[in-house]
Image (cartoon, rainbow, N blue to C red):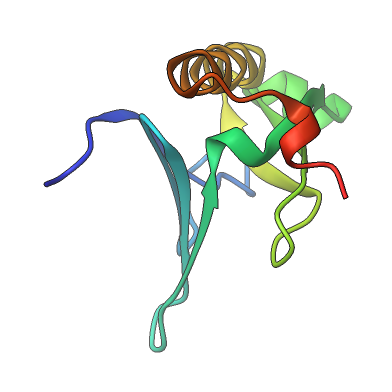
Length: 116
């Protein structure tokens, strides 16, 4: 059963244009990061493992309306990571924060279960 896609965007490293082979997809319970052109690589991070969010923007990113969403995660494989050069980064950060709270509320999980 396919999960509903809440948000999808490509990395936009040059003048805010989606000239990249990295795609970010947020579903109701996970984030998928697809990258590569000849060989493909997909990373998956469950939302309930995400703990903190922040946004960073350089001057050039602000001019072109993109930025980085930085995510702290308790995932062993991924750890802390960034969603790089996406449109409307502050809106995206809020979307992630709301989705994480919804997942945690629906499963009655707290962070104590994930901290080692």
